[in-house]
Length: 312
Image (cartoon, rainbow, N blue to C red; front, side, top):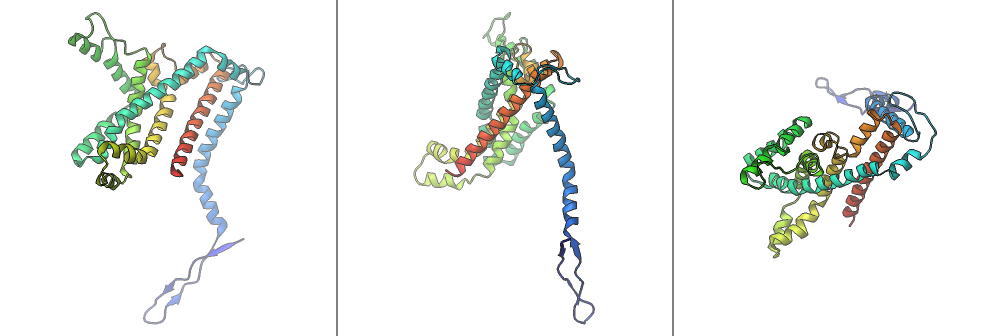
């Protein structure tokens, strides 16, 4: 068994010459065992998730089976072929991509100036106030926030009451802001906005502001400085925020359920319906696998873009 020796430590006793403490040899196997024991809980959790994902993948290749029972039918690609050829499932997939893209763009447009203001403001009170305004809704239950948003966007909610008071709509009329993709887009933007703001703020803090001053000293105005200096340097943070927002919006379940109802069905809602109500676990599993692959593809594309910018 290989061993490793600790250094010899001189110890002074009285006024005489220093004594040497004998080196203590620790077996390397003991240190390796300690590392594996520390990793054991994390490996156990990862193993449980890996087994669940493999079981989900196995379910997706069967043609029949209910939740809580063993899969049945023949194995093959029939379930995936059915999903890709069915307008109901493809409509949910396309709606998920469309709503995720809209909410990502809206959250970036709203979060970019807020994050920039948080980092660049010289007032600590303003910075603290902005962080509180972003963090307090973030720490509130999502269901509570969605139902509060429903009171604002509803047919007799705060916005429609304001529109009627201003004379923009008739007293017996309203602007439909729920049970459609508009309401779901607003809800998804509201959901991912804190993630975008905090991600952008972390990226902005690492940005060297003296580069802007150097560009302006060389004659560049504020617009040219922002487009040619600031924006390219902030691109990795913007890319990370967009990727996070798109993935979170694409996997949303409660937001389309509460604000969209039966009129807007995203992939997560269809998976739930197929597993719990239609009792069609192979379709639910196949949709889950497709959603997982799409998420991995988004993360891989974002990583490749970020890696390409670093080596550009």
